[in-house]
Structure formats: structure tokens, C-alpha cells
Image 1 (cartoon, rainbow, N blue to C red):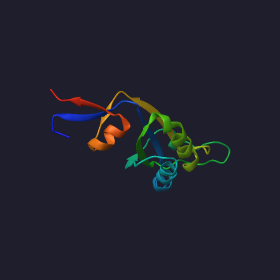
Image 2: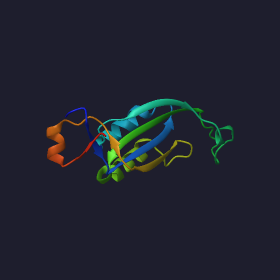
Image 3: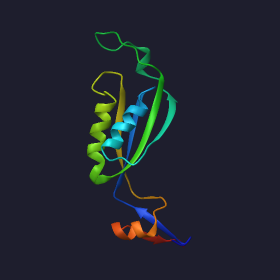
Image 4: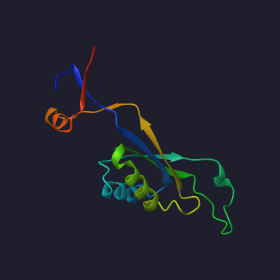
Length: 126
């Protein structure tokens, strides 16, 4: 690939999960088992309802969070999304939040032979 070409992927989504500190590795492993190729994890500090107690059990929410970004093909996204939900135990109050955002386009290095095999769009830089 010359420097004047770039591979542009258009049928992809960004899956974002905010989970309790210490659970990101387990969540990413579940996502990879569902087909995710990788993830970006970073630490964050949340505010909001955590100061209040949740529900009948009186649980408090830890302010320390881990944020996970996963870019996935649209046709695999729902399966990855569901596996993250289960892996992060998001059916439990205060365990996290998860959303999916369609990406208009993204670019990364893809070897020419793989791009050709999958019919990926190549744009020329101007």
C-alpha cells in the first residue's frame, strides 16, 4: 500500500462499556470469545448516583471505573454486545453501562492482500 492510499471501513460500530474497576479483563475476554479482535481499556473516575445507596440491598457504587472501547464489524456487533453484558454482569444494579455507536468510517492499516480478499474500500489521499 502506498502512502497515498488508505483502507476505509464503513460497516463498523464502536462498542463502549463502563464497568467496575477490576472487571475489564474478564469482559474483554468474553468479547474476544464472541469475535472481537481487541479492545482499548482505560481507567476513569465516575460521579453521580454512586453517592446514594441503590435498592433494597443498600449497595454503594465504586467511583473507580474501567472504560472499554471495541470496534467491531456490524454483523458481529450484537453478539459481542450481548457477551459483554453477560460478562460484566450488567443485570446487577451498579455494575456498569454499555452502548453501541455506528461509525461513519474508520481507518487502520490493513495489508493489501487482506483488503482485496474482503473487498475493502481503498481511498486515495488528496
